[in-house]
Length: 242
Image 1: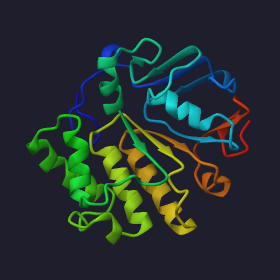
Image 2: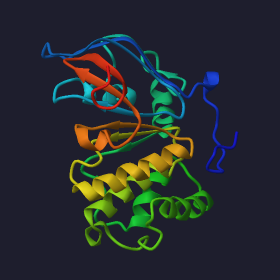
Image 3: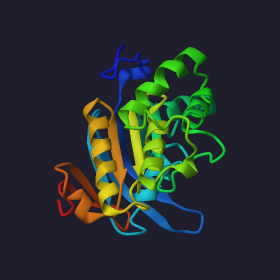
């Protein structure tokens, strides 16, 4: 099936490109309850902000969605994969369907922009031809087509975050998860990054953004899920949605 970016995607079993958490609880080994029976659905193609104070459960949800941890109870389904039943051999396939953007960029300093993206593609078995065709497209999408041969230390913070976004996109995921993607940027660069994520969403990719920046969230007319003490206390448009 050809996606909106002109690339072919393999349909997952069941054909579902939806995120579902049903009655999910997570208790860590130290006895901390991070999630207390939450139920949440994010449809294919949505743009959703996850917001809330520190310790509200946002990071735990991200770890559940990427398969880093399992729920204590309840069910988590991501892009057709059941995280409570997933086998070891399916985890790489799950992670290919998700692109993750971190606050601290996590670029390889000794590799150029092109090499950082190429490394991410080779890690999932992409062919040299696919790498050659895909990287220029993604760099153009994030506005860095002239920066392919530069190293991370030669780029501004905003440009480094754009490389991180390109890396998350380069394997053509169904879903982008951004964990505080503007935490190290000034307000102007933060707005640029959020607008870029909005354009990526318009191309058909589901986008989930974890952030604490109330003013930034309220500049976008998007769905906001508010978490407090492991519970969903708001779900609507705007930071103060109920």
